[in-house]
Structure formats: C-alpha cells, structure tokens
Length: 234
Image (cartoon, rainbow, N blue to C red; front, side):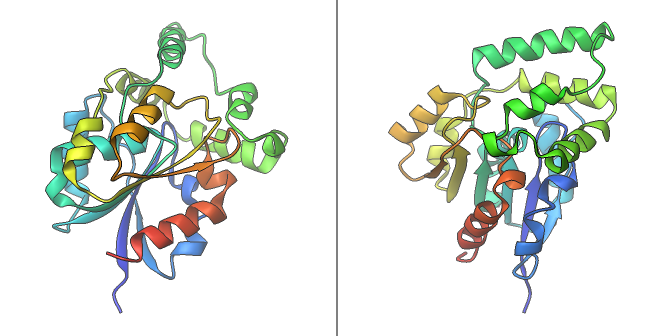
C-alpha cells in the first residue's frame, strides 16, 4: 500500500536533524520529505522554489517556526494545492515587536562581524526547564546552526522582517489546519494566537504546557502522535 506523503519545512537555521526524533515514529505510516527553507528573503520567490519540490497536485505540509509561516504563506497563495497542514511553534503573522527588534540588532552585529555563533543562553532560553542542561539536545541545535553559512543566516533573518498577517487568508481557505504550540513559547506572537482563537474556529489548536519552542526535539512523542492522527484521515 502506498504511503501518504508529507512535506516537512523546518525553522530558522534548522536542517533535517530537526525531524530526527519524530521520523522513527512516523516512517512506517508516511513518506516524509524534508524541504529546506529556500535561500531567499522574498516569500513570493520562496514559494516558487517550493513549487519545484512538489510533484503532486495536492500535498500535505508540516511547518515548524519559520517553516510554519512559510507553509501559511504557501496556503495563502496555493490553497488549491493543499490537502492538510500542520503548523508547529509558529503563527501566520509578523513576529512580536521585541523579537523583531532583537533580530534587527543581531543582523547589524552580523554585518559588523561581531556575532560568532549561537550562544548556549539563547538555545536554553527556548527550552523547557528540564532540558536546559541536556547537552545532547543543545549540541544538536548548535550543530544545525553551524551547518549554515553566514550569508544563509542573514537571508533567513531578513525574511522574518517581511512577514505579514495571513489570518484571513488561512481562515477563508477552508484547508484543514492544526496548530501545535507551547503556552509559554516566548517567540510566538500572542496577539496572533488570540486572533486565531477568536476568529479561526475551523483551525484546530493544541496548546502544550511549558515554554518549549523546539517541540519536535523536546516533545517528539506528542508531535509524532498528533501528526499521525492528523494525516491518517485524508
């Protein structure tokens, strides 16, 4: 029997290792295909690149963080090509003001060569309390970061400044969409979450306790279970 295919779009400075803990739990049921974030800070160009990766008339999408926004943008422009979508730790909106300002400062540091690498403090800030000293997990996240060039990092950072509100597009698309996120995730735009709860009754939302942003790595059993259930009935 042919497996249902699911395309996986990662987050900022994440590679295929992002899915390493959920793949073993899903590969028996689905064909999983990792799609790197296109090397462009223009979302219109990015979705044209994504088009080249999709052979089917209709596809299933999983997006994490920046990949969740990119998946949302793809839905807003190509709704007729989507079967179902599952968004993790990401909202269809701009980032919150404080995070945008932090990234603008970071981009200036990159241009001035004052930024060397992702600090352990930054990594730990987005992990649950019980994982703040998990060296295996921290090293994996750091390793993913180091797999990209400085130019790739700048492009991905710049793309986040171009995010626009896509709530209305997602609501009107009638695409089955589910959002999984942590209640205390500091990277999420809480105004966007509130807007989705108030207006997007057709979009399913599952909230987890804690502050984890890296859910595919910190909560792989739950993420895999939710993905399997979501895409088992198409």
